[in-house]
Image (cartoon, rainbow, N blue to C red; front, side, top):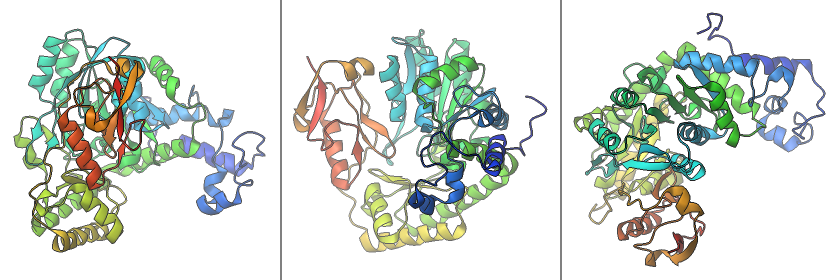
Length: 483
């Protein structure tokens, strides 16, 4: 990399500070004019924030075609993460994931991927017309969760689909599980396939010690990194990292879907957070790991709950586990994860990341401390004492293997009609149904609707999961492919 780069710098933050100091008179957008036109917003967000909520201009560069301070900030991010290039993303990691898929595959081309991907990956298939070759991840029968993809299963998929253009992996999954990324990269590259990685929950892999290896360090071609999840930046800010890719082409693809009015608040948060991680990331994530391990030990002492960790690595489908993830199995106390999630929020004023049918996830990151962890542990103890019941009758399977009938794009844009959900078994879905979070579809366009899926949706609704995706928000009806 350029020897003149210094990770102590934050070029975009410095440019915005100069802009503020110069007291520019704005006759451009946004219309609030540094907050003067919206005092209520100033009161809510603060004058400093509104003073740098600005539009692209020469001294501040332009994200669609960076040539100065944004270009330098992206170069610093690339160096910090060990990539050839980094691209600031202001549409969330969903936009970065879609960019990766669309850079790798065109209409009719195949991409090998696990089915437990985030909806953004399948949305990308709807947009570009690529064909998924799903590799069912392993499953932990007790926890009811999907695991990673084994190298043998990926090799089999490659043997059966030698014309596939790319392999898509999660690193890690929402629950903290990683596949053998380095082996997959070596295998894919030997066959001329790219490796693209959803690293939404893996920012800390680049800076923490004793954690699974990061995608760029394993030689992957592209990785989508949610800086806002564990890296400290503002919600919706993300990075797309690349190696051995044409940066001009990647920028063109990103410009197909990314705004031309990029938020400087989001971008400056990426710039400052990258600097923080580059200078202090190692010590920061050592502390995060310490907190997570402490929480896991204390929760497991309660009994009934199971905060799992690297012991899952005995399974071939779990190559590594992210020990910063506080994933907790709840069914043994007779409560679905979403029920524990709701009780924590409604009765203890604790907001965790998500709850599903059998697990909860609490994110431990740069802003947490021991007192916060102790409050969570105490609340879980009280919930068990007050609400524990017989676990019989609880649904025990979080992942349902799909039956893929049509490419997602064909199903989504094809002729369709609506049927009552209860009468739709055997038909092919023309839309998504998913619990959010985590945003992994239960049903995607082109997949056959089964009795098991219908029962799962009904159970998830009953337990209080937020189901999103279908055109009919009540889910009384579902859109199916005609014919």
